[in-house]
Length: 453
Image (cartoon, rainbow, N blue to C red; front, side):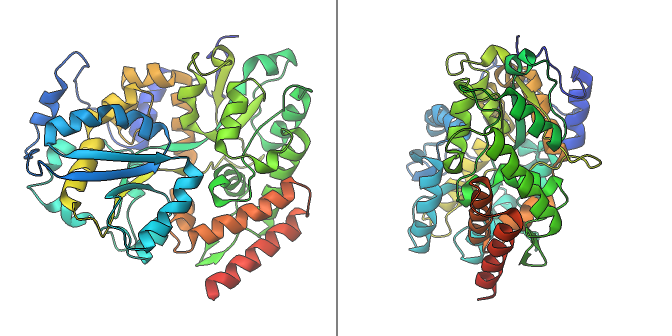
C-alpha cells in the first residue's frame, strides 16, 4: 500500500496544513515568493548587511551527524563565497558528540566557535555559551526586517528565551516525537493506526512476528534516549521537573513508564534495552519493525527509496494519547550556540544568521530538513522532500507539544544528570529488572539528592 493511503486521524488538506502553520508560528501573508530558479545570491544581497566584513576569518563548526548537518554542509562553500569566512566542520555520532562537547567546553577551549547544543541550562550556568541579544541589536550584523523573526514558528521564538529574556542560542531545527507505521504490516492484520496507548500496546503485540517487532523505541540507559519516553510521561500528565525538583516519580509518571515498559517488553525487538535513535531508524528502514516512535526528522530517510525498504508503505501519524487526555509528545529544537571563548564571535553570529535565514531555510527544507521557518514549512520543496503526510503529522505533534514542560528539563542546569537518571529507571523497567514504581522512585531520589548536593 502506497504511503499516504492511510490518513491521520484527522485527514490533512492544504487548507488545514496552512492554517496549522499559522497557528504554530505566524500568518502566511508575508511568505517570500522566491523560487529555486531565481538567483539565490539576490536574496542575501537584499539584506542591509556587509557580508564581507569578516573576510579571511575561519570558524569551526561542530555537531551531531543529523539532518541539519547533512542539509547545511553542501551549502557551506556558498557561505564562504558570500562572506569570505571559511568553515571547518566536525560532525560526530550524536552520543559521542554530546559526551565530548561538555568536556571540551569545560576546559575553556576557544573552539568550536559554533556548536549544536541541547543542554541549554548546563551551558548557560557554566558560562559556556555567548549571550546573543546584543548581536541581534547590532545593525552592522543584523537586518531585522530581512531576517524577519515573525516568520519563525511560535515554538522556535519561545524556545531559546532564558528566564531573563536573554537568548543564548539560535534554533536550527524543529522536531517532535511522531508515530511511524508500516501500513502493510497493519493492513495484513486488518488493524487501524492506533490512537491511544492501550491501542498501541494491543496493535504492537498483534503485528509482532518472528521476523518483525511490533514497535521500536529508544531504551538505552542514557539521557540521549529520553525523548520518546518523555512523550509518554507528558501525555499521562507527568513532568520531568517541577519547582527545581525531579518529578518523574509521580503516580502519572510511574503509570507512563509502566506502559512504556509493557509496550517494549511485550512487542519490542530483542535487545531493545540498548536501543538508541539510530537503531530505531534502521529497524524501521529495513522493515524489521511494524511501528516506531521517534523524531519527526526521520521522515526524510523513511520516504527515500534509496535508503528505505518501506518507503512505499510508510505512514506518519500523531503521537498516541491516554484515553480522555490529549497527546503531549516531547518536542525540541536543536539549537546552535556560540562558544563564549570563541575568538570569532561576530563571524560566528553572521554564520548563524545566514544558516537560519529565509533564503537558506528554503534550500535546506528542499533537502527535507524540518527548519524553524513558516515559509520553509509551507514550501513545495519541503513537502515534496519530507512528504505531505509526514509534514502534517510533524506539525500536529509540534502543536500538541508543551514547550514549557520540555524547557523545564532541557534548561535545568543539571539536565544531563536528570535525563540520565530518568533513562536508567526506564531501562530497568523495559528490561524487567525492576517494577516501574521502584525504578522511577529510586531514580528520582538519586537525582534529587545529587541536585541538592
